[in-house]
Each structure stands twice: as structure tokens, then as C-alpha cells.
Image (cartoon, rainbow, N blue to C red; front, side, top):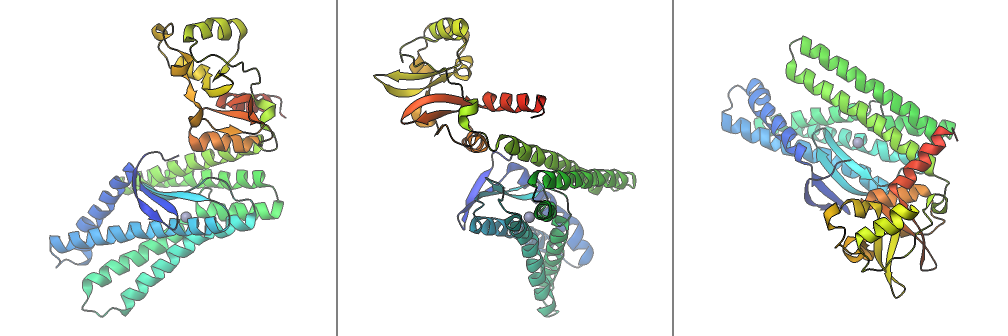
Length: 373
Ligand SMILES: [Zn+2]
């Protein structure tokens, strides 16, 4: 869901990235600490000292969010729910899971790990605050605020609306009790939407109270939560609808091989328009070189059709992914999404028996939902 951003390194096998929107929130937090919080708490500080405290505190704050997400990832990886990437963005951080937990117990552990980490970090900063002698005002000020914000993070994330951690905890409990992931997800995501709407109303209320910035911010977070709740539920129902069905059920079977030197206009006239075919493995001497689909054809300007060959139009074999005909459709969707590709080959005994595109999956789902199956 979050494409783009700057890679900043790897920790415990997880790559860390800063989304472009993160720089906005980093600047806002640093500025509000420097210009508002520290000058009010410590009127005798000069601007340089406030700025230094602002930058240090802000960096440690985002380090705390990273630790929170990292703990989700470490626990996830230990439980066999792979997390390859953490992205910090304008609303915090996300650990991007490539699949959903298989057991309620795993989901519970993975979800609760984040807020517990924030709580622990908050405790450490408050311990530092209480242990430091009175003279060390700078260190005390920084650690007090960090203790507060980490406890706030823990509490905020425990709000029981999916996809917040608390929503995942709620879902895991509902799932454990009903043994039904789909209804558990629907309930947790509805609570998530309700929380989102409450935030939006709260934000509007604050705006009318004259707290323009805080109100706007709360409303934006609410809007983001509501959208994320809807999106997560859709994603899960999609996986659910596809699960238990195999690649051979939806693949396009009629895929004649074509010669690499065939031109695009010949393909369009002789095969696509005349026979209604949509996918063409490009082969010479029984060796498959690549694949041409309608998608490839559409990306070539019409005036180039007489001169472009299959070899130029195709997606080369090494850029293609393949699955066996027995592969579960939910895994096929995962392959398409993770590799950001539009089709996979269905291969059995080294020969191509079919092709699955995103459109095959979509029409499969549409037909089934229309029939109520
Ligand atoms: Zn979390």
C-alpha cells in the first residue's frame, strides 16, 4: 500500500524505509517541540537549546516507533508470518506482512508485541527521568516527553479498531472464539470504521472549538483509519473468496505459441480479432522466450503495429513467474501482487498449459459474487 520511499538500512532481516510523507511529520513534530513545547516548559532556554532538544526528541520518537514496528516483525518472523519491510510514513509506521497469520494465537502475539514494546520504552524513559539528578534539565525534559509519547502510542494502538494493533487483538479473540476468520475480520473492521468516524467527528468538533491544527490532524487520522479498515477487510475477503480454488479453474487454456518474428498487426488480425485469443507464448524451436498478452499489445502505439515483432512486444521469460495448475488461487494473487506483475504462466511438466491474468481472478470473483456462490 505504501510504494516509494528511501531505504535506510536493514535490522534483524527487515528492510527499513522512510516514505516521502514521513519528512512532513518529522518536520511538524520537531517544529512543534522546538517552537511550542520546550519554550513553554523551559522559558529560560535559548532557541538553540530548544532546537537541539526538538531534533533529539523527534529522532528518538521515530526511533521508538521503529522499535515498535520492529518488534511486530521479529515476533511475526519467529511465528512464520514473514515481514520483509517496515515503512515509516506520515501516520506512523507499518510492518508490511506478506501473508496473514494462520492461527488466532499467532495474530494475538504479533499484534500485542508492538504496544508492549512502546509501553516498555515509555517505562525506560520515565525511569531515566526519575533517576536523573535535578541539574540535568535537558536530559530530564527529553526523557519525560518520550516517556509520555510512548505510553500514548501504546494506548492509541490498543484502540480496538482494525487495522490498529488493538483491532488485531480484538480480531484474534473473536477468531479464536468463533473459529471464523471472515466474520471476526468483518466485526473488527466495522469497529475500526466506527473508531475512524468518531475521530473525524472529534476532529470537526475541535476545529469548531478553534483548535484548527489538532482538529484537522485528528480528522485526517480518522479518515485514514476508516479507509484502512475498509481496505483490509476487502483484502481478506478477496483472499477468502479465492482460497480453496486452483489455478486450473480460472486459467486461460487456449494459448497457441507464436513465432518471435511475427508482427503485432498480424497477431491482432489473425489471432486476437479473428479467434478471440488473449495470450500467446512466444517460442522458437520449442523453447519459450516470453509471453505476449493483450496488455502488451495495448501498450504499443497503433502505428508501430506493422513493424513491431513478438520478440519486441513480449514480456521475456525470465521476467515471468509460473505456478503449477494445482496452485491455490490465493497464492496466485500473492505472486501477482508481490511481484507487481499482470500475469503468471501455469506450467506442468515443463510445458505451458495456461496463463492467469489479474482479469481472470477478477471475473472469477465477480461471477461468484453475482451468483452468491
Ligand atoms: Zn503496532
